[in-house]
Image 1 (spheres, one colour):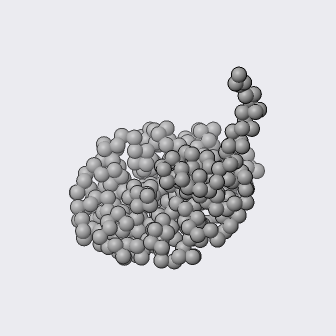
Image 2 (image 1 turned 180 degrees about the horizontal axis):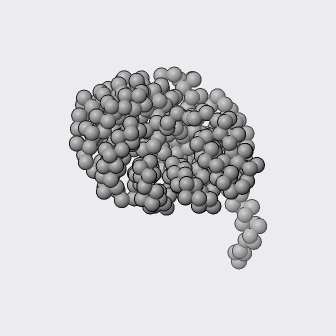
Image 3 (image 1 turned 120 degrees about the vertical axis):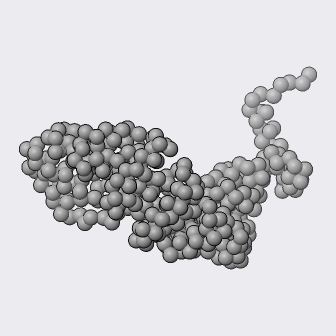
Length: 382
């Protein structure tokens, strides 16, 4: 009679069978396309010999083939801890982290791979894309430049380079790239907008306005085209033109909170407080991180002697950017009006400590983050 094994006996038997796996078994399973069994076999070998760096590296490779990149990265890191000189594994680790969208984590192992093979084309492109994905735009622009020069017809690569230069505030680089892109496609509204942002960054506001006008002519409903143009009119105190463009943006996108904020600011400047409040309150309902909207609401409420509302709005403005002195100054005036001299002196002292920051560049007003890594950047690494 065959007796059923107890739970403990069964576990021991399975353990014995697993531990009996050899590298040749794992390799055989992998060649047969049975990646699950191959991974089990490599895991068994790592349990049998926890210091076998090659077994961990092989496990990582099999897991990567299964697209289990998180587990693969763990295996690769263990392998490199045991043997930092394993060939090919730093690159594999970098690729696994890249596939996971962990761009900052991908950078060190890719750089390690490049140090041993400086001409590796995959590593060079992967490093550039990782810098971009991680938001390290100065480094991305440096890494993307030779890639774009080597492949001048790759429009998406050149656009990534131009975006990197723009976000790194390398405006000469950005304008050069955008001009070349516009030569290839003069009817690209998106590139006209980006060109405008770069020109504004160099102080060429009138030329930036012309680029926005060109973008609007090409595509009247292009997202943010009227807001960007309106902002530049606002910046140069052309308020009637600014109002027109903000209204056009809202016609295209009724929930465009930034346009509402600047319409409210214009109404405040023109001493129309009730109209201003209506725009500003709607803006903060839609988007809770608009410093200018809270700053203007606080100023209006202070003027109307609605001190609790002014206090709340200005505290939020300070919270959003503590380094801007204007909110501290107005908050100090509110505390004075409320009969709180100690708090008022604290805020006014803070105002004196701070220096007015330069106006935030247009690219950051139009977007809180750059476009994500293009799909072909990811696909090229398959």
